[in-house]
Amino acid sequence: MAIKSLSIRIDSDMLHKLHVVADYEGRSANSQILILIRDAIEEYEQKHGVIELGGEKGK
Image (cartoon, rainbow, N blue to C red; front, side, top):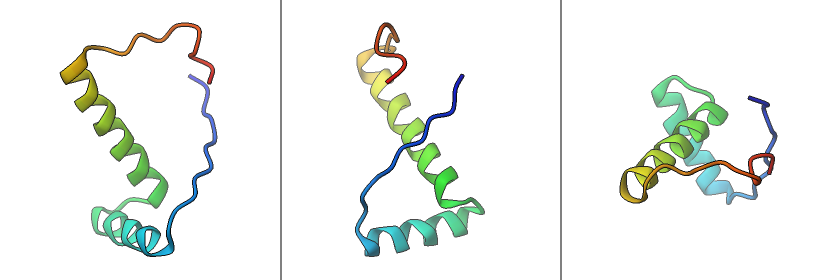
């Protein structure tokens, strides 16, 4: 699996709060974001079924 980079725009207050949560969990902000994304995908797949990766896999 290739590691891709993603740039996001985030409000400074939200970014500060993200760092507080990540620090509390003993993680970096990046690791915390990855966990939040993973959890959101798992929740989606529980409701809607597994997301099949086809031709859009490289995006």
